[in-house]
Image 1: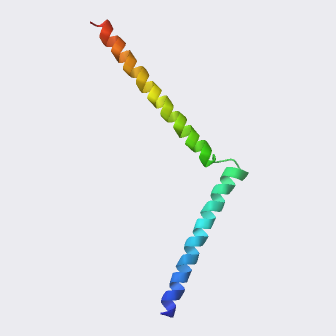
Image 2 (image 1 turned 120 degrees about the vertical axis):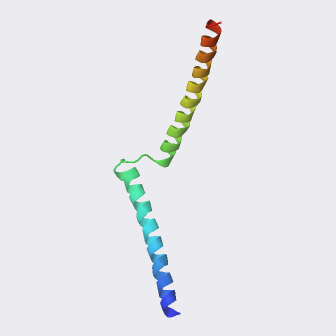
Image 3 (image 1 turned 180 degrees about the vertical axis):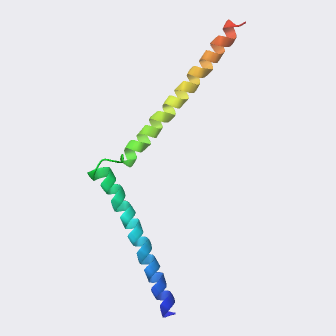
Length: 72
């Protein structure tokens, strides 16, 4: 029973330490070195990218309609 408790405590410590290391590394790369963009910047980029994709699809559809009408 004691061994199982010690093992579980060790596993909990390991998981918490790993999570802390990941968070610290992420913050260091975003804030200190600026090697990674902040989460808000990434979200904005993907939102803008989705908007460009929608606009490109609309343009493609319009070109298809104009091409079809000019061929008639």
